[in-house]
Image (cartoon, rainbow, N blue to C red; front, side):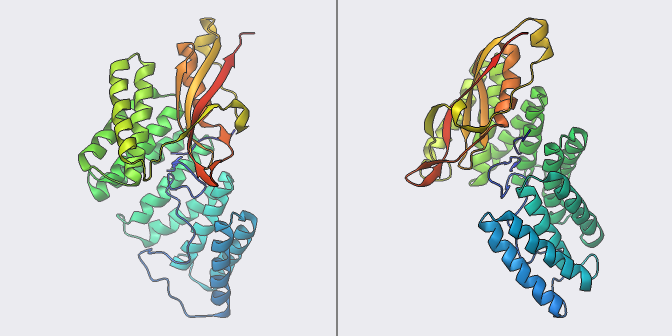
Amino acid sequence: MKKASLLSALTLLFWIGAHARTDSGVKILGTGQKAGQSTTAVETPELKEAAQQTTAAVGFYREGKFEAALSSAKRALELREKVLPKEHALIGVSLNNVGQIYYARENYAEALKIFLRLQAAYEKTLPSGHENHATVLQTLSAIYFYLGKDSEAEKSYLHLLALRETAHGADHPHVAQALFNLASFYQFRGKEKQAGQFYARAIALWEKKKEPGMGQTQYVTALERYACILRNSDKEAEAEELTTRASEVIVGQMDSILAKPISGGVLNGKALSKPSPSYPIEARDQRQSGTVAVNVLVDETGRVLQACAVSGPRLLRAASERAAYAARFSPTLLAGTPVKVRGIITYNYVLR
């Protein structure tokens, strides 16, 4: 079953959003990087071809031609490994590119192998506080999550948070993003108490720093997700206050990154994939059944950014929300432009 990112990621969702995976920390393909060492090398026929193959991979990737992009990126890696030292920065560029393409294709097993190699190379060549350590760790965290390796994912997210706090200080926006990713992980794994604690910390930090841009987008998402958790705990007044704050930000950003989503009504029939939720044991034991309606916000790529159950038996709501986050939709176009859509997904639980 496909799962949603933390930023994105996914994050992640990530953010977790489009396949570029800004939520997860994966960056767009590139031909060079600041890796703490020079990317220059004596020009050879192999390196010239590697540069050409890398440029081709970037073009194919941006066109969504992942098979062609992967072929070119792997050829560039092969050529660079042939003539350069094992930890050379240009090999790191190629590893990163190959890993990104596997990630975009949701081939997480192969992506894991590549990013573990990249992490090992960074550990040998970069100072402990270098940003690339956190970037690759953020990607690995999301990969572990998608592979269902929850123990490794949790350790990785916690390690990322510690790295961010050490490198930037406890009040830095990067720390807020790490808190958001960890909260998302706990929420998607049904640990709402832990998720709420980390969402609250991220929200407080963003409000203190008043970060614009992507931080503002995640801030609104955190407000709405935390509000949903509070509603599930019958803390309606606190939840409504958070929802009001989120709405005020959205109105203020109407012409910017948080354009108001259109209404899509019931979205069940529009889903490309809609995994069925698991039936909670406690709900079975108490003979709870019926229909759960989940309010969802679908982003421009068809991924679910937010999911909150608005009706149905209490013991069935959290499972329905987790299933909704795994749903996928074809992008909705308005005058030819992809837009966000808000609607309802319903899940029917029948005791047998």
